[in-house]
Length: 149
Length: 149
DNA sequence: GGCACAAATAGGAATGGTTCCTATTTAGTC
DNA sequence: GACTAAATAGGAACCATTCCTATTTGTGCC
View 1 (cartoon, rainbow over the protein chains, first blue to last red):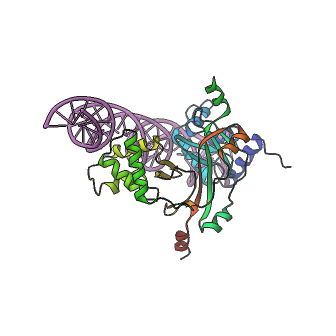
View 2 (view 1 turned 30 degrees about the vertical axis):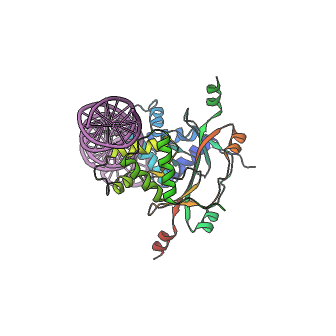
View 3 (view 1 turned 90 degrees about the vertical axis):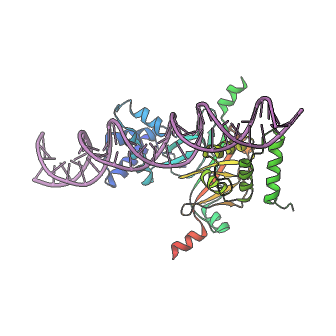
């Protein structure tokens, strides 16, 4: 059984990939990849900005977007768009199912596999998938508990 | 085997529901539900505005959004948010899978069933789903053909 | 260590889909 | 036809994201 990589290992891989591709390892970029390696709550651009400004107070909004866009283009992170919420960013580039709480905004990963493979979709419809999103909207355990009283 | 309702039947149901709930049947609303009953391409707000202005030239942007919001709140249509595209509106409120072409923007329905029921998700994770979205992004048949030459 | 240069950043302006505001208009009812 | 609450038109406001550009910074080289 293959264990999943630690935050430190994930971060090291990202640093290596960026260096290999000739990207400069600026303090802003290192802060962003370090954050995304550890924070698995799929933070949005505003969250990321707020958090990295704790160590780098003058980071600009445009730098965060520019960096996220670069990481996305390089396939190192995944950008997720959600219903009634800002975009979120996820270090997990594999396809998976998200459970999105309409009350607290938390996003969990669903422990189930992709139900139709790209090949199955292609075969059935002649549509060639390159990406997918699968999301459930509702209320998470703790928000249901609060509502019940 | 139950046949699917005709556009005329869908429209009649929407009119009936609105009247029952005490909504006024204005010319703008009738134009919008008539369009959504016939147009199964999941049009966006801008499309809808453009099309209904052919018969009602002074319809405002805000009316279109206000009406779509009302239909959505009443559960008569479904609002869909997409990656890199404006919102779209769909008369089909049942859960289904969309195939979205990254080239021409066309959205097809995938002829497969919902892979995890709400009950299954609830049971597995303690998360209570109320809605879902399942989408594949890629290239449709005709766009692949064009690209091949 | 210091230099040169392209790449990256900060800060602010611009964008554009959507929402908000409110005076005017209208569908439904009697 | 008149009344009234609901709906509409038009434009302003909003706000996440993108664009613009002068300044700063990492990297490679000496």
